[in-house]
Length: 461
Ligand code: FAD
Image: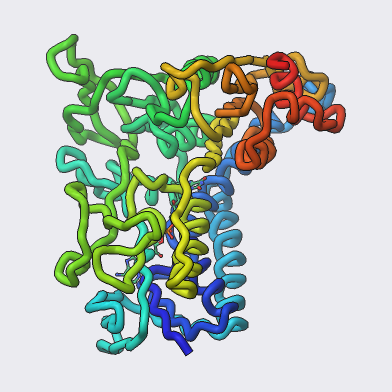
């Protein structure tokens, strides 16, 4: 029987463990904290749980608009919000532990250190143990990037981890970084009643190649409508602690292109990026790129034969999302089990979901990325849909990019309620190489928000 040791029990690591165990492999899963990783404890699930509390508040605030009479005075009870989040996380963690036990995956608690494909040393409070195996998978994920100029103290200067555990809503929350995490937290804490300011160094929100420029501008408008202040092309140059908070200096970015201003803040949340968890890997001979991410070939094998790496630890080039870690887990396990028939991991069709208000779902190329190719684009406004009017959810659009001559889908970009769910259809269509006509000829149930995909496709037929 093959023995596989996996370091890291996040979505990458536990998916690989379960898949390998189902295939009859003897699996040891090493985790220094809890099964579930960033995704379950400080990422996807906690943010969406807090988002659901924010949604509940926003719905109550709009009751009159829906013809519901009566006075409701509502406010977030942060200890209860956080307790609910912990309960959701604990339920899912127990599910993972049960599955591990059922499949016979040996879970070892402690800090794993790779020696080679056949040996992992695990250090824990009980001492050190050696795990001998045949193959290893590194799935150690990533941690919040600390800025030397803004070291997190977990009170005044927070990481995204801290922002998920606040026992009170800060009066004025200043968020450094207008990426996915910063924008999601901005909408959540604005709904909870905080004054929110986002400071972003780039000239737009969500400065990711996968996010359409028009959708980024739509998000900026929605933030302004809600009273979220956005400072683009600016950076926090200094935080001067004071009574009950701090004075924050905001400087132009790049430097020297305008005046420095100050803002009061009761908390500063730093969401400027992630760093890989790679302690000890270089000593084991695992090649890292100049930024420290683990280098893998197209089969996900590292520079050490028999050692694979999956998930966030392989860096932003390979898309740092939970479902990407899951897909890579299946590829790595396949390649370990079938050495003569190894597969390359594809990154061509990877949907992404951003839980702002409205949500954003995207897959494939943006118009900007398709520049230089002969393409056609259609945009359909969400507010034209009956379901959007019925729901009172009007902000949003559906954008489809197709190859000019064939009509083959290249990208689908959606902003609007439930965009994160609707994007699944587009991902399947792209994966299967469908044309706009094929999408248009697929009957979509009425009245639903998915009709936006059908309508936008119809504009290209
Ligand atoms: P991780 O989930 O980071 O797991 C790594 C595990 O390895 C951890 O449990 C860690 O304790 C353990 N570990 C590390 N080093 C060692 C060691 N030496 N020994 C033993 N154990 C070790 N992605 C989405 O797809 N959708 C979202 O909505 C989303 N929202 C997010 C929101 C936030 C605030 C953040 C921070 C991230 C979000 N992400 C989201 C990203 C997602 O969480 C990650 O892409 C995903 O968790 C990566 O999975 P992974 O298995 O590679 O690593």
